[in-house]
Each structure stands twice: as C-alpha cells, then as structure tokens.
Length: 432
Image 1: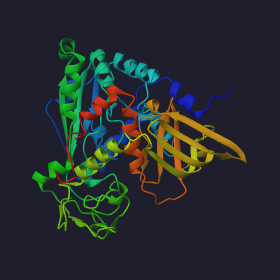
Image 2: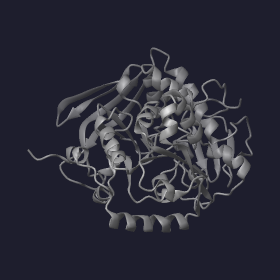
Image 3: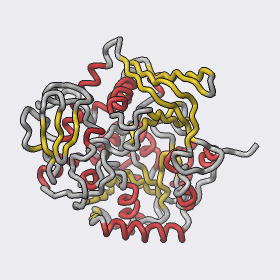
Image 4: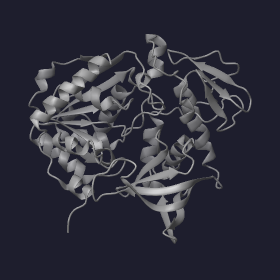
C-alpha cells in the first residue's frame, strides 16, 4: 500500500542537508537578514564548534525566527526541527526535505523525532530546536517542556542558546505588517559535554530557561527603539486582547488607527512607535504582554467553574495526505457543526454528508487550541493534526487558546509547573 505524505515524512531517513541547497538557502537568508537589519553576536568562536555534535536552542518570539536563528548559527550541516504541519506545504515541502528538516508533533511525545535527533548528533551534526514549540503570542517566553532538559542531558553535545531582542516588535503575532526596527540575535555557548556530565536535569532546565527567557516589551522600555510599519502598531491587536481592563467586558475592544477603544465603557489607549501604551483615559496595564497575561489569569479562574463552557460554530478539519496542495485546498472537512470546550475537554458534534460525525478529545492530550491569525484554531491529539475553522472568519479566538491551555494544566502537573515558570499567575488585576 502506498504511504501517505505523513508516513513518508515521519519515517524517512534523515540525511545531512544538501550542501548546494543549504548554500543557496543561506545566501537568501543572508539577504533577508541584511534587509531586516538583523545584528548577530556570539560569546564563543563560531568555527570552534564545526564538526562537533551541537544543539541550537532558539527562542521563538517571531514568525521569522527560523530565518534569523538558522543564518546566524553559521553551520550548513544543521538539521532544523519543525512542526510537521508546517512542512506539508506545497511550496516548502521539497525544499525542507533537501535541508534535512526533522518533523515534530508539537507538544506530543515523539519517539521517532527523538531517535532522528540522536542519529544526527551521533554523526557529529547539529540540531536546531525551538523549545517553546510555537511563536510567542505576546512577546515573552512561552513554557518549555522540562523533558527538553532530559534530552540535553543525554545528548553529550555542545548546547548553544540563541535569543532575540526586537524580533517580536518587528513582526508581532497579531499582524502581518512588517515593522522597520532593529533586531539583535545573541548566541551563547551554555553547555559543553563536560558540563552536562556533572549537571542534573533540574539544573539544566533552570539554566536553559534563564538563558532563553525574553520579553520584548520590557526590553524596549530601556532600549527605546522605534518600530514603524505601513500600519499603526495597534492594528490587529484585538486578535490577542479581548478583555477591557477598565470595565472587564469581553470582545468589546476595537482598534481605530493607533488606539484601542472599548465600545462598552469608552476606555481608550494608544500604542505608539515604541509599543508603549500611552494616553489612557482610565487605568491600564503597563504593556501589551502584561495585558495578555492578566487575561490568562482571568481565564484561569473561569475554568474552575464546573459550568464553564465555550462554543463555536464551524468545521473540524484535518490535512489531506494523498498529495501536496496549497492552503486551504489541503484541508478535508471531518464534520460541520459545533465545537464545545469545557474543563473536561473538547468535543465537536456535527454532520458530514448528512450523517452524524462526532469527535471527543480529552483535556489531558490537548495542550493548546492555538489560534492562527488566518482565522482558525489548530491542535494535536494523539499525533494527529486538526483545525477548527469557524463560520465567523472575524471571530476573536485567543480566549480558546488560553482556556484550552489552562484546562490542560488541570490534568498535567508537570506542564502546569512549566507554565508557572513563565506566566505571572501570582499577580492581581491588570494594573497591579
């Protein structure tokens, strides 16, 4: 029987990146980094790690981090690790395979990916990882699975950590508008094989998290760099901010030019070229990241209610795996109806071709219903990738992301602790 795209991708033998392809790719990435005014710095001699087993741990503050981190690392034998749904793109699939990209089921245990990474290190190659898994929503660090420290401990490799400053501000999560402004990428040699032999997994995790941590809004309060695009910096921000800090009303925020305005209480605040929140006519969070984290704290309290429920009309979809197609033709509809999220899990009840088509996903195996600015939710369940595409294309979906993540934490103590390491659960109201 002919293997589908997923089987062929997951089970293929991972080879060294094609040198001709990598030379061409690196040349292109160099042009992009120069045009984006990206500056790189290293606290070690770059060539000293050539030919040695090396792991690059990179922050994921922007959608272009793959470009910055890969280029600045300066090794053409690097096998980058990427979510498998991002590889199954008609215009990227064959290029990624030539680059030796390793596919990964996001958030899920992935033994095949783990074995492939160890094989690369065994031949003295390099691995590129984004431990956060997904791009930052609000410009600060996402949780890092402590199991990453276990992998590092057993890798017996050099470990380089790369973090960015300004990358989120140049390409934020809520808008496709590219802002002109400086980006700095810093590379640090955090561990050597000799160090890993003496450190515990707990020590490795703490050191890794400390080195990877970033917050672009906190950074720019001191750096005072301007970020200016074709559209105001407030444009699209209502995709990640849904709750008014003044009246606490949800989904009443709208963006007018450079201002965020509540239609319920007339609260307003401007977002300037530094991403400062200025000229507020009422109490306001200190910055966008604090506003977002306050929303998370509110949702965390909500899901404790036994009657908590969210519903959404739309379609449950999966990827077509028979051949490569351009989006959205690469989707197949599994059911059309209603998604329902409670503190016990996610369900989708609907029909397909006139017949009932119902699905149940338990809370412990769904880490996140990650919202896309293209207007859908995406998630993994038992190593399968799904999308929920709402009928309302303009729906604000970020509360689904926050609620699903905090519901998962009710059933996963280890992940709950990892979230506590990066989110300010102990803070109070938005303005404290």
